[in-house]
Image (tube, rainbow, N blue to C red; front, side):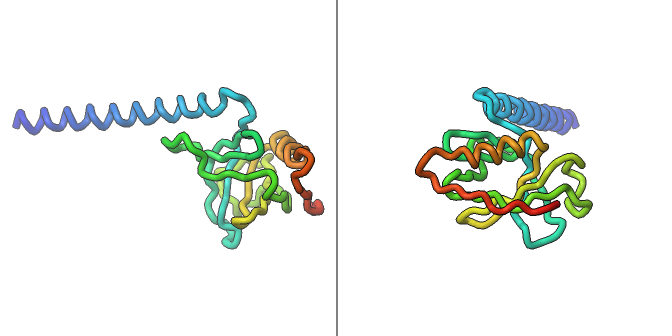
Length: 153
């Protein structure tokens, strides 16, 4: 009986240590991402064909000529998605809909971003959206970025 209790204590201590280290790593990762500035909260949805498909909470950051997107809960230091400024185009904008679920705030704006690998939707606050659109429009000479026509909301 004593060996079982000791094994359970070791198992609980190990699980607790792994959880604590994971939370600390996620916090340190977020600090590392934001150390150079240019980061903002940004949720992403890949499946545009299904109404109510899930959003993934994340953080986006500007890095040279690309926008990098990282999921909020991940142990990886590498971005899950990269959007090259020369190859993406801003599509329709809209407000949050009830079908978008509870992960998004009411004041967030949703932007469709179209690229060579298909389209995604990004959800962010109005200030971050303005910054993203400005970043896309301010492409250096020689980059062939085009804004799509604005659609009424």
